[in-house]
Length: 170
Image 1 (tube, rainbow, N blue to C red):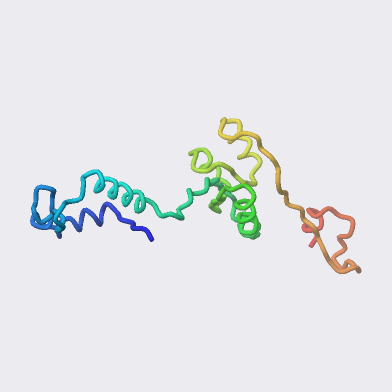
Image 2 (cartoon, rainbow, N blue to C red; image 1 turned 180 degrees about the horizontal axis):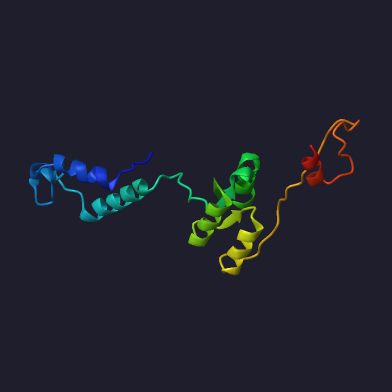
């Protein structure tokens, strides 16, 4: 068990205490009722032990370091990040946090230093970002591959054409 307080609550609740509720060592009612009072050193030791016990929960683990990432909505929509994030946390001990936005906004977050990693898909904007000194070590990790699939008898007559030519024909 642990106790958690907030400064706001303590500040608001302090008005509920009056001067008569506060006891000090000079107040006779604050002294123990036993015939011999506790030695000051024992009282101090108990206070230190209790303060240590309630300062933090016993099971509190330090928060994981976090890696901030801005990615495009298309990457996010694949579900890949939802799949990889728990594996990354388990293997690396780092929490992955990301925001899915357009490439322009992702690059803006990078310029502002709001994120550590970017996943974008605008080569010209990415080059400018790098040329301006905002990024290092670019890696191509994904690419689009357009595949045209249709019936074997090729009713559109596009067999052997590039995808661009086939789409123009269709």
